[in-house]
Amino acid sequence: MKNDRELGIGIVPYSPLGRGFFGGKAVVESLPANSSLESHPRFQGENFERNKLLYAQMEKLAEKHGCTIPQLALAWVLHQGDDVAPIPGTTKTKNLDDNIGSFKVKLSNEDLKEISDLVPINEVAGDRIHDVFLRCTWKFANTPLKIGG
Image 1 (cartoon, rainbow, N blue to C red):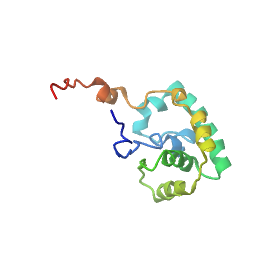
Image 2: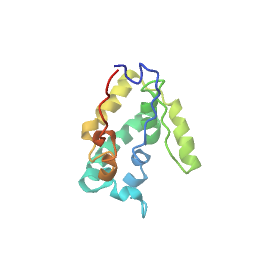
Image 3: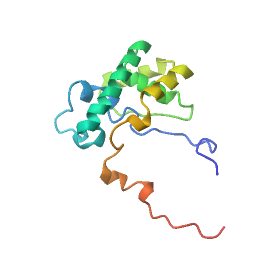
Image 4: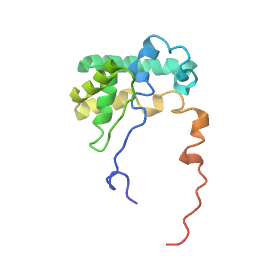
């Protein structure tokens, strides 16, 4: 069976800045009042404290590359292939300009590995989405088996 790339299907990463986590405001200041992120698993209690450590490491790496943390995160995503098109959401022109600046961040294979090693997926604390939404994913689908041809 062919994978998405072999079939020429593009990839649009969902929430490429980790629901604003790599934007930093929630990390270095606090979550805005009435934010939906208050109930997000990665922004709660011990999970949030553990994830802040990953953010601090990314902060040092962004400084090394002369860019912001969102630019570094988006640059990493952009360097995953020509078939990858992240669409970070924003309501502020400043953030849009910052996001566009991620195209100027050039990363070598060593840089990409360093970032991946710095933020390994198994070290990110908390579920990626709320439990109620997780139950709506393909993992819980009751898809009937294909019959015939």
